[in-house]
Amino acid sequence: MPTPTNGPRLGGGPAHERLLLANLASSLFEHGKITTTEAKARRVRPFAEKLITKAKVGDLHNRRQIQRVIRDKDVVHKLIAEIGPHFSERAGGYIRITKTLPRKGDNAPMAVIELVAEQTVTAEAEKARGTRFAKDEAAAAPAVEAAEDVEAAAEAPEEPDAAETEAADEAKKDES
Image (cartoon, rainbow, N blue to C red; front, side, top):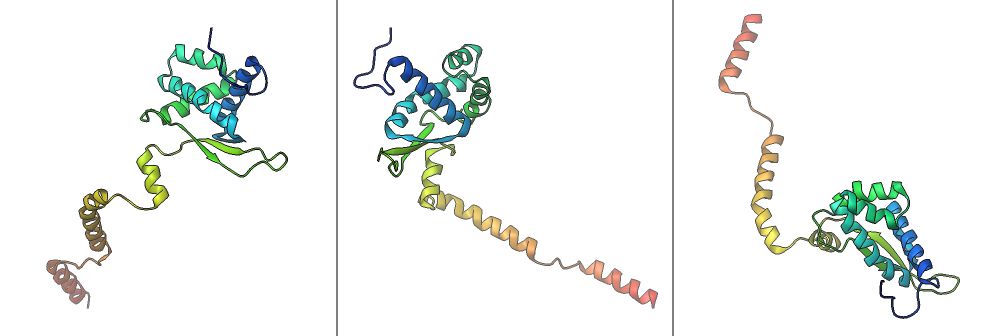
């Protein structure tokens, strides 16, 4: 029997909490991003990450384990066919939680929970900073210079060979 969580549960009883988390995870996989309260976002994150880890394996046993939680077959198919392979190179951290403004009616703390789009943490950090690491810049500098030389050569108009110009001149003289 699973050990119950300490403290108050989301939505009342344990069965209702399981259904609530399953519905949140299903919506997350279907839409890629959802807005919910911080408490629900913190509770659904490990739940959904375990499902993604099972989807990465993608065999029959793991598919059935996922279907025990998520009842929508279209969402299960999307999870195994698209989301799982997308995160195949990533060891964990498939989901990001970002805090947003409180809800207008009851001032509840809200958060956006979304699937991570970038493949690596380094790529996300570079994108956020808008820069690259110094060692990457040093390695990329010779490649950039070589690419610039190729572009300059491609942009320069080609000059015909001397033999081609002589042949063209003789052809013009013959026509005259």
